[in-house]
Image 1 (cartoon, rainbow, N blue to C red):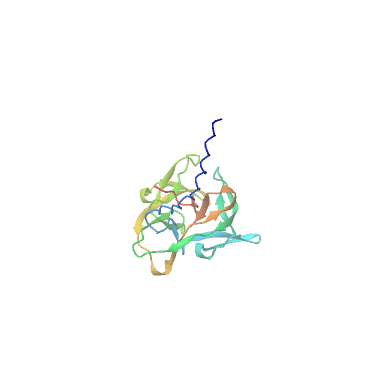
Image 2 (cartoon, one colour):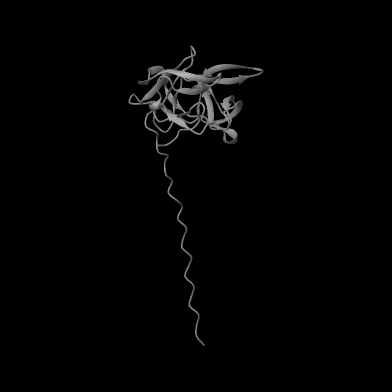
Length: 181
């Protein structure tokens, strides 16, 4: 009678090698807004604009749902990294006084009138563009290249519960997480 072949030992599984995230050019580490950027924090029955660097998991901040409707959304994390002197930002000035913000060049913003289907990178924003704001729609007065200031410290991204990916920074609706190019 023939002897059946001895089965080969199964291969030893090799764990996948972790791949670090690809940083977005600009702030370093894929984070998008300097720590001095302002977000709207829910406080009791009211709200207050605070530095993004003061936000922590569990806080509720002003965000936009998948249709662009403003809502309160819960923060689950605030990844951040040191802002390098070589970091690059774009400073966006809106028509409404006080609505300005900085973002890394490849950070994206939904354009008005597109049903949230078309975004523009900060580096491509120009005067006259229409961005979604906490007041509805807003016209960009200008967008200029900017270097980090000493008081801006670290560069932040906000992670949100429930798949929310749009937050309000400096009065303007923007993506919570970076868009990798």
